Image 1: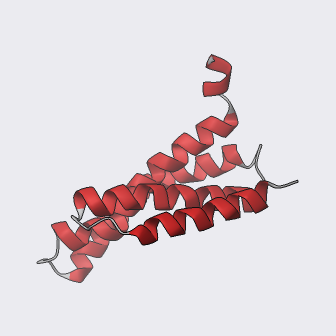
Image 2 (image 1 turned 180 degrees about the vertical axis):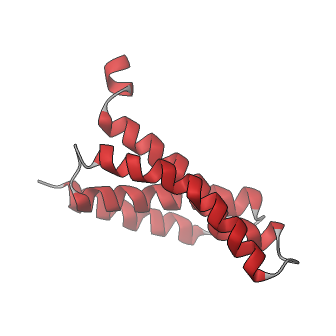
Length: 118
């Protein structure tokens, strides 16, 4: 079990999930938390948050690139991005769930299938 948890596949995916949490908040959190502030102040705060995203994302991609191809890493990133964005938009931004999220997820599953297919 420990060998699976410490594998580069798992480590890179977990790190990409963490980096996506920072990224999503940096991109969209200011819409709720800083809407009354100047846009340039929100940009500076977002850059500060994005710094932490990059500090996780860059090593995650370097680790992942040892076991995944570049296209596989990109599709993994897109799946993670949507998987993080939907709960973020619903829980933090109070957006309603839409069935389009399901259709988008199914399209991404198709992309995963084709990118990992021999």
